[in-house]
Image 1: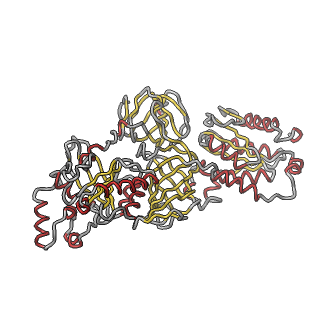
Image 2 (image 1 turned 60 degrees about the vertical axis):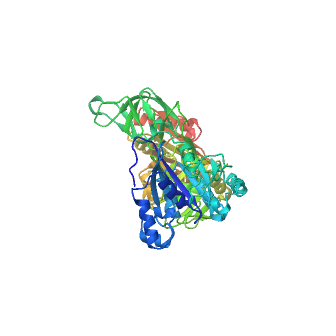
Length: 603
């Protein structure tokens, strides 16, 4: 194939259509009529056809192997290159539905537009509709319909307009708005690279003119700024107090002095410096560069957040989204089971909550009533993550809309985010409602336990950064309460990793991932009238709200140690600096009395 000119812009086009409707012939004509074939290739293929006593077809130009030509069909996925004065094109012929869908849904192919071929004589077939679904599910916005083989219907305008009318109505039902319909004869070369004298009633573009009119996506540096936070590095050597937020710029650019927002937390600051490894600070960072930034105002952010500029459109934030997913896992994807989602730098638990439509990639059959996603299925689904995440829509910003799903340590699916989903009730809310409806209560009341124990049941949570003494303080409080005759119990988070959650290895090592289990335990312990104490490093306001919900109808008592990273949640005590442990414990003790959790006479 001829080399693509580096100076001109490139565009990838995918071509789909029912078998024998002529899509390979369309590609062959584009290659031949734009002079994009290697010298002598056309003559060589024609000579091969003559030797085999078979009529020449432009589709044969795509067949790389002799045995494919003998079968008269295209087997392998073909990527062909041709040029116009405006740009260089990569056109993808996709006969293998499974591999095509796998590449397209996971973003590997990055087609920017689609040509969908329909045979004028055969008319709209079931596969024509399935390919329409396919284009819709892939999120392609620039779609042109080529009504081929007009020579077989004597270039009849009425037949073309009938197909246009019927297929437009179908596409409207699946939210696809075609750019244009073009009548063509690929075999005869009519309306391929120029206007056809045999189709004088068509005032629109030829295929080549339409390709040049497709809009090119802007360069990645000109897109909205997105930097997924991979880690935060703190330096202490030789008085270096920098705190560097590091990651790779996926799109856009940022400069020192730009105001930025971190999502999903919503925290804002200003870029102080742009840092690179083992080099002097820079003034800017752009798409494709690994970089770090220091902030003028220090804010607490976690790895997995997305940094965006405040003067640009931000990512979406939520725990519910609609997506198209391609499933390659050995086991089917099941509703309401936990999987692991990886999107940009985010790693989080996710559940499939709704299946709206499924395409079988092997034959493109559609099923709107399927209850699971099998291997090689493409499905339009609704998902819910364990906490809010930041993401973009595939129609707006591709790189931060792609994700993969991990099942049993293997990548089992890939997808693109289509939109935000509003279910009305979260999985957590539904779980708590159902749990409380069936909660079986004993014959001893909460008031009786309070009278007997001289305190109310309470969940006390210590939160803050790692290494600041939360655990020591929590255990000291447990000891103070126990030796005061109260029923207190401290739970270490590490007890869960190889204990209650030993079948959830993804959760080990990340305390915030234990939130649901801790909340359920707290509900039981407080209902039993105990003072249940634990500590979580790196908990944010979402974690605290989740624990509050899980512990209902009982309340939660929060002690923050060090920098308060939970501005969106009202903590009960904030210990900014831990100088005297005994004094801090006594302060918490007095607060418990003040809130009528512990009786005065129990001191």
